Length: 124
Image (cartoon, rainbow, N blue to C red; front, side):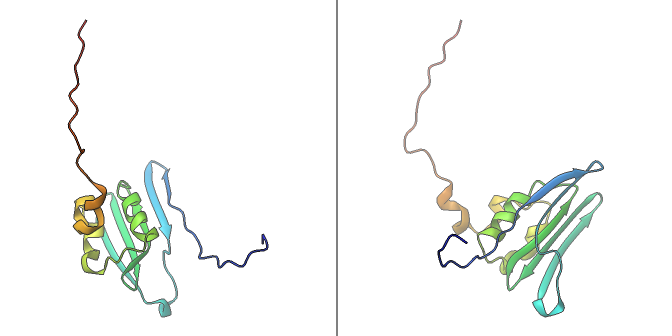
């Protein structure tokens, strides 16, 4: 469009909104033709529904209902094309979080401060 020769690789967004008092979060592919070889991992407990769609071991989409607090983490796994085949069932568990991921995915991003800083508190 701007005169260059670039391939558009596509994009997706994370949509998270309350509908009639129920929080819903979704992104990516929700279903597709049988020839796409999509795999689905689902958890449904009470008012919480979690569905993660995989293609070739990578997150291709998701729908969360009720508790959408993990949507951002799943979305980033999808956006960054992190292979999840080895621990796909953890994606929909109640306890899934940053520390559920293999350490090599988060360890270099979580560091200790290089030096301790002492603060002096003033009291009135």
